[in-house]
Amino acid sequence: MPLVGLRNRSKLTVASAIALLFVIASIVAACAGAGNVPPLPPQPGNEQPPGFFPTTPVTEAGEATQQLYTLTFAIAVIVFFLVEGLLIFITVRFRRRREQTELPYQRHGNNPLEILWTIVPTITVTILFVAALITLNEQYEPTANTPDVVIDVTGFQWQWTFDYEQQGLSFTGAGITGPEMAMPINEPVRIRLHATDVIHSFYVPQFLYKKDVVPGRVNEFDVTVTTPGRWGGQCAEFCGIGHADMQFTVNAMSRADFDAWVVQQQQAAPTPAAPPPDGGPTIDISAVSVSAFDQSTLSAPADEPITFNFTNADPGGQPHNVAIEEANPDGTDWLGMPFANAGQSATYVSPPLPAGTYDFYCAVHPTTMRGTLNVGQ
Image 1 (cartoon, one colour):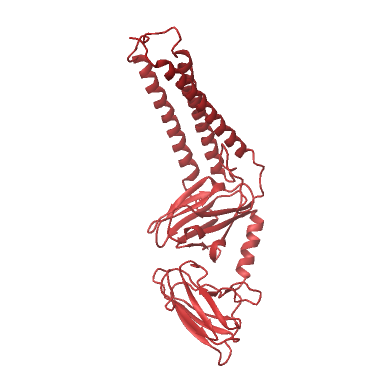
Image 2 (cartoon, rainbow, N blue to C red):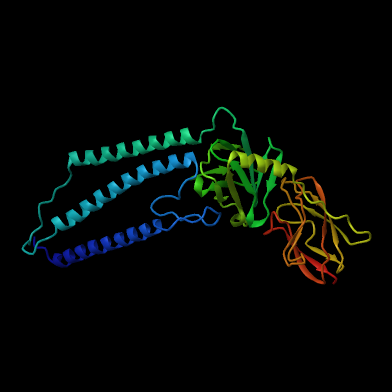
């Protein structure tokens, strides 16, 4: 049978192959360029962007994960060039010649080849599966002996609380800065994950690991950081409107520095609020959920300190406080500290405020817990 119109199809096939090679080369060049970005200081927000390979790990388990990734990447590269090379070879070797007017011999099926390309991928996937299983069990399974440092991490909408029960310390973040998790290097640290509302996910890119934080369940893992520094962490599971603000910082240091940090934190006491002025304005306000105070509009006279008698009545068990935007003399936000845990009360005294309209909020849930404070109006 004559190959009517096949000449144009042959030209189109060759052109498509050339275009495909050009696209592949462009992608490879772009990825290679991303991998050549010079290292940045190990500060939160300045992490080196990944290229062909993940960001440089700072934990023993992360190094094992990177080795597994390298093995997988090498196999993927071999498969890619094998498949694409065969496709290009077939396209060029068996293209229609100018003198050909009939279809070439058509072969349907080849049992040895079909067995080969079934067995080889099966063996490859099995090897990778076993390697991943070994890495996961060896590196992330908690050890039988409890480490000296255990950190209970509680995720809630939309912040974190880090509890060091053995050291008697607890930290809850405020706003997008989040709390700071300090830990010693070159020794295992156990991290136990708790959630009080919805599913969150504990993720530090430099750990090359993340784990879900599930309500009603304690997920735990041991991590040994090998490099001192500071790295940003975040929730990696969409958990609601304030998900983007659910951040924290990991601060890894030597054991001696960690012990000194513990002593410093134990000795530090929250600055007590100034005593309420006699006859000054007093506002009673409560937190009733992670979404609202019991009042959305407050009023107070101008140019007098305001005393807030705050009660945390949130049945969800979240910490709260009262803060006012741009209420400090230097224009920064005033924060009532310390935070009040569920069932607790606190008294906060704000600085005198000029007449005007201000926004007040909870510094732990600044997106949802907001209201208006009318001063001198």
